[in-house]
Amino acid sequence: MNTGQSQPKPAHRPLRIGFISARPLDDPNHLSGMPHSMATALAKLGFEIVPFITDRPTGPTRVHRKALNRLRTLQKQLCVTPIRKWLDDRAPSKTRRRVIDPVTLRSIRIECQLAELERLNQLPDAIFGCCISSSLYALETNLPIIYFSDATSYIIRDTYPGLMNRGEAHIQTLHQVEHTSLKRTSSAIFASPIVRDSAIKDLGINPESTHVVPMGAHVTPADPTVIEAPTPPPTRDHCDLLIVASDPIRKRVDLALDATEILRQRGINATLHIVGPGTPRSNASTAAKPLGRLQLSDPNDRQTHQQLLRDCHIQLLPSLGEAFGIAPIESAHFARPSIVANAGGLPFVVLHNKTGLVIDRDESPVAWADAIESLIDNPDHYRDLSRNALQRARDELNWDAWGHSVAKIITETIATQR
Image (cartoon, rainbow, N blue to C red; front, side):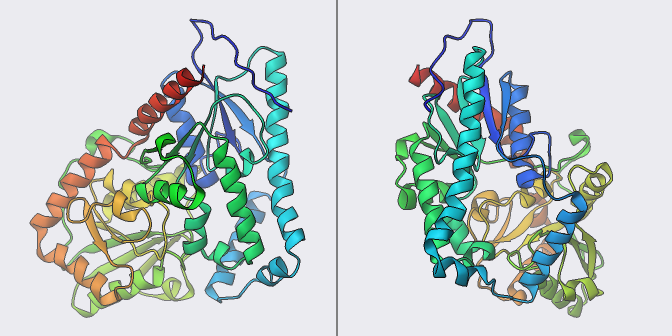
């Protein structure tokens, strides 16, 4: 099936974008809120958004998902090696089918929807989606495809335990799917230079078709006008730290806790506020204040998150691996700097000694404690970081800025292929 023949666009009609997503676009929790925020940003600029939902609505209830998340967290904490790795390589042909069959089905669903829209003379002018390599693999269409991602399968393989614990047959099939899918794209947009570089080097994408556009924050002030920089710096009597970690192992909650406890040993009244499941140690520590998981779709959770971002002096993100890192951007919108590891896209999100501090990911908790203490002892430096973080968040790291940059790429891509 080859759907999506170009149709003339009436002069009065806005550009129509087919937006691929596994879940409904009004779900602010899916993929950390990226599809929801992107669709909202493009709609604000006048694009007509046509959802292409690839996964069936049936699935685990919210309660079941919470239970599954908890089981996965416990598995990581106990360092259990999944039996899947052994099964992946024992039966590579079955492993390949387990990957290829569902991604092919997603492509077929999109083609069916395109065929119906073509029958109604309502085809979109282009296809767009975030992290949609699993939907493009077998898709046949003449429509331009604009692809956005904050990672590649190669980056995920090297930094995310969930993929590191899979067999080689599974990993190589994912690489093949992504490589094939990217060949179908007209323009490819990446959230950071490190991801674009991986797409060029590892997946062979044409550099001339690539762009870098940073993402925005999902949790921002209810009223941005009340946020002023600089914000009050931490002191030895009052130092509130924040870590947002859905994966407490990869994001190293316990290292952040170690640094907090070292600060306390130095006479600094430091507390680590933890958003996410935490670890057995952090959940029992007097130096930590666990908040559990906060859902973006829950107004009370969102308000709690906003208050944390406003009150906590510094956000920590000592991740072993990070494709991009939205959490530090959220702190920046509240004029709060972050201290992050030099993993993945984090040095692009947080500019060292300008909007925060960047530490080598191999450094010890002592180095993290030293970095925090340096901002306590040098409040002027903290104030400079606060001003710069807020300014960059308002200028670059927001969904309105993202929307304007991506809208230009979409419009130019459509014009080029007509």
